[in-house]
Image 1 (tube, one colour):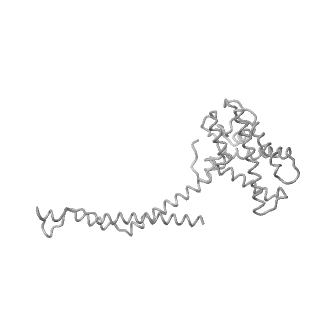
Image 2: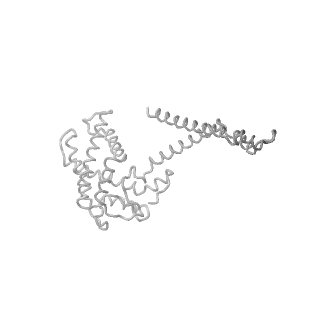
Image 3: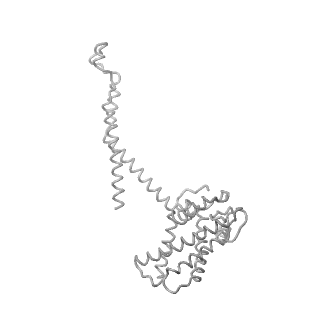
Length: 288
């Protein structure tokens, strides 16, 4: 099991640190700190009862180099490091400012710069395949479908959930691929840019409008999100090919476009207010 592997790893680290501490302590205890007695006796032998000058410090060193104490110190140090790493991992998992759920965006204090072809490819892969957030969103959507029992021809249980998740994922990949191709052809901006305004209503309005319009290649003029909603329609229409029941590609496409209005606005809202959400959870605010 995974937790057993972590335990074995932690035990191995602790053991190595303990061994290293003990070897260091033993090495200090046996390190020669005096001159060769045979050489000193032939030149200027010291008084029999008079200790060598460095003998007291050597005794103190031996007394302080307690292997048991060092073992305890090393164990406490490893425990502290492990605790801090676990805490950092939890904060990272819920740090929406980093893009786990929000995806790629441009910070409030950043300037929009026209994307290169390579940057567009990187963003497409991140938002479609390589980011955990992409799969988490589809998994959440499949949970809703499972609870509602849609499509009704798919049964419940793990098997039914797997079908619903695969359907959502296939539709999402299709929609994102079509949108990426369209935006690249038109030269439209694919990233969300945080509002430079202040206040709840102006920022909420900005989040809603950015789901409907985006900048062209000049990063100055706003244009309708043709590619985004065209991709959503195409993904929905294609999903009718594998969904059970009557094949209604137009209806499925329109339904997907309406879903983009709702889910896209919600995602933009979380992205816009991610700093405030982080602050409520105790995550350090971003300077972006």
